[in-house]
Image (cartoon, rainbow over all chains, first blue to last red; front, side, top):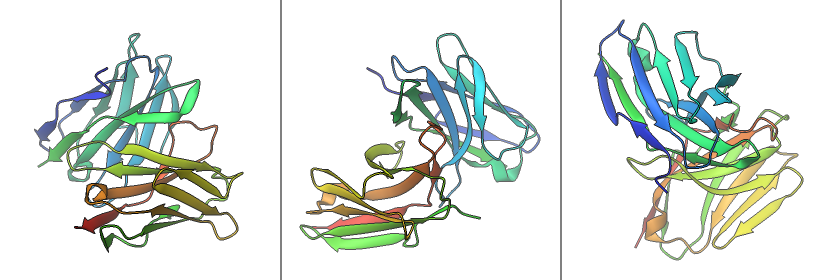
Length: 113
Length: 113
């Protein structure tokens, strides 16, 4: 069991660019949540996908969007990057019928210059 | 307004002694609380949780205590081991909002041999 995997591990972009981050959930999991963790802070909830739809959203602007595919993998897209978007982006997967257990991936470190 | 606060950024204890990590929350709607451990270059790993209907939950060396009236929870690690050295995050959510957890900023625990 590969657990939750994310790609790429690191990424450098410049202001105004767009970025796509990818996540493969743990085998058997159908729900994917995305979090942003700024340096020295805890993870902040961005949104959650289930059945290819955004089910919940945190306090993030529309520049942050996502997608979930039929195989449950997910993407996080960020448009018009700002310096403040520099952070570790974490993906977490779970089963809709077992919400207590949420597994996190190692994250993608995004640096915006 | 930070709804989950970990007021101690760091804690250092001697191997074999007790580690006590504290967490306060402000949102009275939260009814499920979790602790995660995070090593460098890895995603957070679920450690232990507690529902608001309980005031204590124990799992091996780890015990979480919940004081609802004070909106306070704590994680006790007894005895502490060098391998416990990590960043510990407290998280809270409304139980039915699976995946949408609110995290504190973490406490870095160092256990000295």
